[in-house]
Length: 211
Image 1 (cartoon, rainbow, N blue to C red):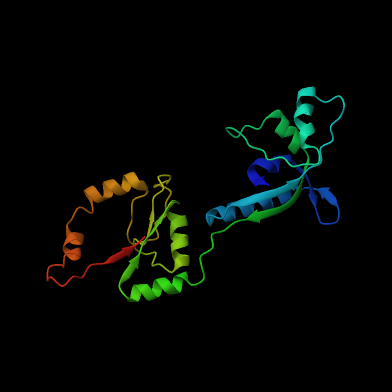
Image 2: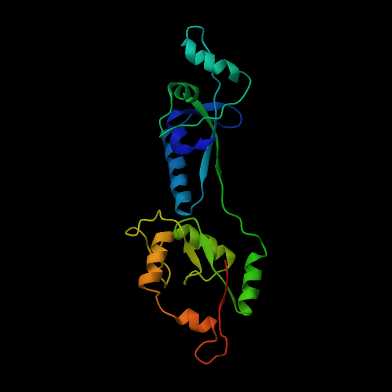
């Protein structure tokens, strides 16, 4: 099981559930299209494949020695700098496509209801996310947070500002360093201090944040 970008070039056949048949270019394109669609929704997609590897007597001795311990077992492949070794390439050559698997985030069923009830009591939730803006916004929406304002804050520094299509009223910074700069140069007022200390009328109208 691996990311489809890595394994796809090695696939030659598809398992239909009854027999093997050649993997067509049209089907390869369908796999890539599904991957692109899922990426837009921040859903990781993995490709599941299978291969049987006979070890011929005249095959490279060193490679054969590495493979013998794998007989009747499994192999977990890792790569460095996306550069597979000769052994890995030989293992994956002419693999069989079995299936695609997608993994999505799951929000607890009662969480949106609980957040709504707490909001009515004056408690405001802010979701600080390790993901970029779009993924943060997606999860915040599942939680029932108002994503039009700063209820979903991304702590990820990996963000292409030029390619970002903002869908919120508050165009917030991304990543810890940008957030620090934003606080120093744009949100540098004492309104929060006044509210938390009773406000201008001394009535204690502070907002409560639960992260």
